Length: 157
Image 1: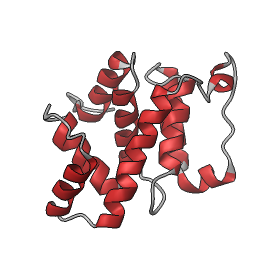
Image 2: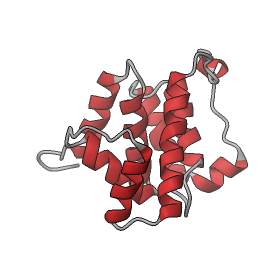
Image 3: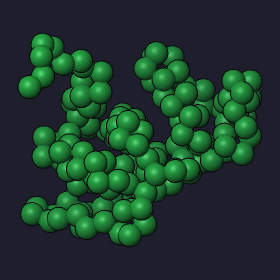
Image 4: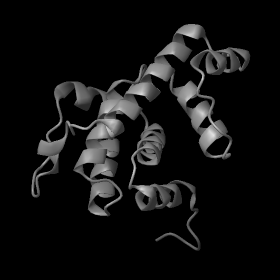
């Protein structure tokens, strides 16, 4: 399923190609690209739920935005998201790429992915997808792009 999400993100978002909104047409295109029907269905539901999160009139994460609050991870989240990835999420909050609401959106989407525990690189892509789809986070999206694609110059100490 993650491969399908990456394919869609790279094909439509990164290349500025207009996303097909017809579910059947998009399913046919993904099938022609070699993806299995069951995985396509899961990926499209994942995308729809992401849209629901950011389009909801009632923010399910209001409590998470309290200043000075600390995120405690559920055991299922700990099993899915390794220490390095949790540290990266905290770093993104500290540099204000993520706020508590977008962090919770990222965690919600991570927990809905199938498969093995996420790698840090996979998490970075999920963060990009969430920020791209969350209105008002354009600057944060560009910061995240820079973190992913910018190569360090000179020697690292």
